Image 1 (cartoon, rainbow, N blue to C red):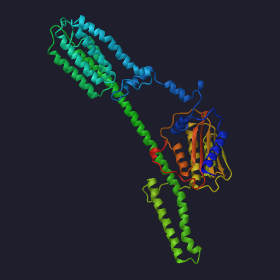
Image 2 (cartoon, rainbow, N blue to C red; image 1 turned 60 degrees about the horizontal axis):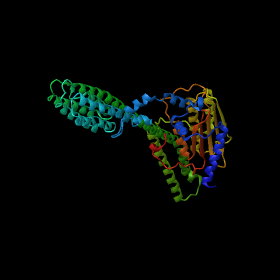
Image 3 (cartoon, helix red, strand yellow; image 1 turned 135 degrees about the vertical axis):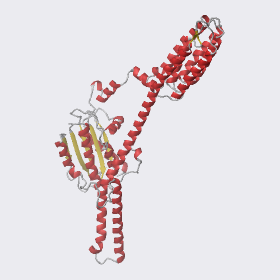
Image 4 (cartoon, rainbow, N blue to C red; image 1 turned 30 degrees about the vertical axis):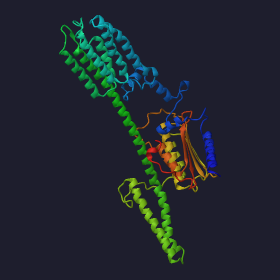
Length: 500
């Protein structure tokens, strides 16, 4: 039988077993749900009204409102040249800064021209030019606030100089007209939400310095507005800079949390692999010990053996003993107990469990209050390789532990069968929805459940299928090949590339 036909037949057999154990569903589970279950373990997914599950309704109720979304977008740090609210979820929110600034420009431009002409007595040509130079660059402030500030400040200084020679400047605000003060504050908001603290301080000090220099040329009878602009600008820069700093801090926290989660997943994977290596040491050591004994006793069991043959058996025994010593040293490193591996180890000394102890595991779980039904095929443990025997027990153990932790009171079915034709052991654990109230996931757990299952299945060259059921339950299905060639693990991968 070809490898492709064998894989297809295995998938068909596994689906048939799952369909008999799991309730009927309206459609296949979506990949996103399966991945979410892999990351978070067994989560209760109660049905809610209008077809929404409990977590979906909870997320919908916790979704921030429009004002909250705008506040989050304002605090979000932006890249150079990125407009304000560029990361807002809705298109109208992303266009809002342009609309607001355009409204200010459309309002300030005619007002500036009229005030400069009627109140200050400035010529119409100069008034029009100053109105355009002082207001139109505000449109650039949404994306490039620093160049816009330089252009607006230059136009404002030019206007102050021109107003010193105007006919009716006395009894009016100078050097900054009311329209200049309003437009400058819009500019300060755009600056504060996008630039660094150092840039904001330099802008503020430059504003004050220009005002002080202009104060030396102050005409008689005017109302000086240097202090007003300086104070208002500083206040707005402080508030908007604080908002931006809060956004930067939140982003750093999120990035650090992501790094911590990735490191935790990698550490969990490495710990599980070390645990599997410790357990398999006993299996391999047993076979190596048998080889040593057989090689040492061969000259006595087979009399009349020639000397070269005796030397060959002695070399085999010596190599086996050397391998055992190397394994003990490796085991000492994996356990991290600091002993010499011969007389002081603190590792596990009890025999490793197997399929024949799954029934005891189920009975202990039932005594703990979880309704579990088990179905173990007759002779399923006969002649099973040690790695498959141990892996099947650990998969059932991890699955039942997850049911107790994440779906208390759920009815659970454990099935372990053996396919003679396919030469494999099939492990199936299916639980229904939780009957008791589900509390928050444990923060102190090891988090090895699904990760450990994947590693044990990978060790034997099998496959693992996990995912939620439509009624809120969960399934774990593992296929463990008995053939030594098929059971060889695949190429080694870096732990950081494994799914968490």
